[in-house]
Image (tube, rainbow, N blue to C red; front, top):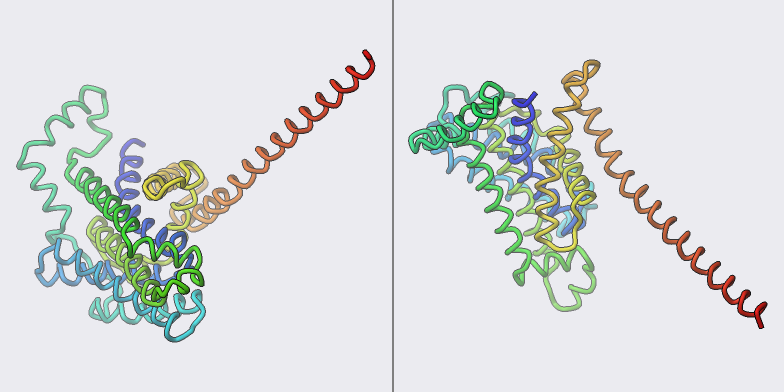
Length: 336
């Protein structure tokens, strides 16, 4: 049980990068970008094929992110220059990327990374050389979890550092002049255009960065799972939306820093919920998409129900206050 939950947290940290990309397109740019399902595989396939051909895993991961950036920019160009509907431009790019991804992966539907040196294997070796595993393993033995959790912590702390860095860079970027302009495009494109801003260029840039994060996450997931598959991106947009919605519902969005943190925590919570749900006896791995759909529906409906209850309470308090005021005035009149 503890091992599966730890694995869910570990993978949730990696998927949080993808969720941040979805947050940029859906919340910041207000653009329903379905390119995500394709660009996730683009990053995974690019990194996997480069690693198989002997390239440095870290450079391969960055190359995967750059490939996603190009895919996102093309989606933006289809929308801004081709005047294609945002939803349709994303669908068209997602379909095109299926063939592109097969080309990247040498026409193979699956590229295994078993026995290959990856970013995670390198970090695990580095962590062990530093001798940092011993304190954590001793602590686990002391609390009785020695056999329940993994013995290596290099991957876990490596991904925490990577996600924190990406979050801080995202927060900083969205507060720069360009970042504020991209946020303005999502809020009111007509207004920002009246200030002589190039909204088309900002849209293309925003979608490029969004899909770069998605592809970067895909490259890390491929190395984490030791394979890249042409179908691994199916439903990825739903996972990203679920992470965003859960995070926003639980932690709020009062500021950019808080919103990005909420998205990261939402991705982790989503993976934990999924891991717990799959331990129910009558559910199996084939029900993952159904579980995802239920989680998203629940995440969408619950905030509205909570808000409706709060509104009812506010109205009831106002009604009681008014009734007390009216009753008080009546008592004053009767006493006179």
